[in-house]
Length: 279
Image 1 (spheres, rainbow, N blue to C red):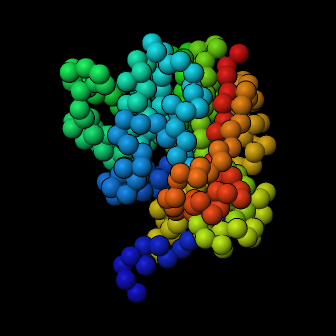
Image 2 (cartoon, rainbow, N blue to C red):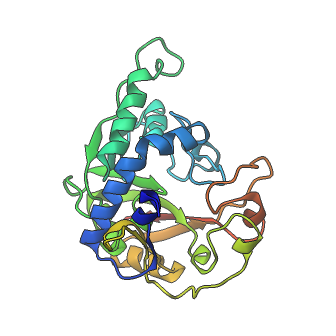
């Protein structure tokens, strides 16, 4: 057996608490940062804002509203492509991520970025902060908008705590928007082909998906919540759900991304985008 096979000897569903999840996912994203960008960077763009594998862009759906002059926090920012896009619209953006490796990738992009759009002025680097979104190092009511595109939410054990932290740093009237794997996908195999159209697992089983090494140490963890869970977490944090977007797969996108594909996307939703506001 090869070392690579040994490294992923244990794959399946088992309990994983917040501490184990943070440790595993920080290490996984640190290791994957360069390869992830090499594989998906062209699709995501360096200064673009894509909500998910369907290719729906913020410039099309305007879920954040007018961000000019607004204080904006991105959690689970990865290489900060979305933050870079919003900064180009005049937002005051801070990008944060659990993984130092992903933020280093973001800094590398900043180092080679061209001038600000429509000007000859050099592009200002995005402020980057390494932190756990379940313990944000920012004061109360510090931001007008908090968002994440497929960051944080599926990768934390205590997503309710993340919602409370987002609510805490939002000012009254502020907006939280996050995209994540559509909960219905949990019942189906993570396969872009016909096998991925057969429901095999209970939608209501919230046991995390865990990849572990031969010693049983988690190396990657992903958590599931139902649609109802997500709504309850938002409302318990004092937020008000104002929209739930389930993007349809566009005919113009023929690309597969992991378990996302045109075949599956034409039949079942792959992404859910939650839009909430703080009263």
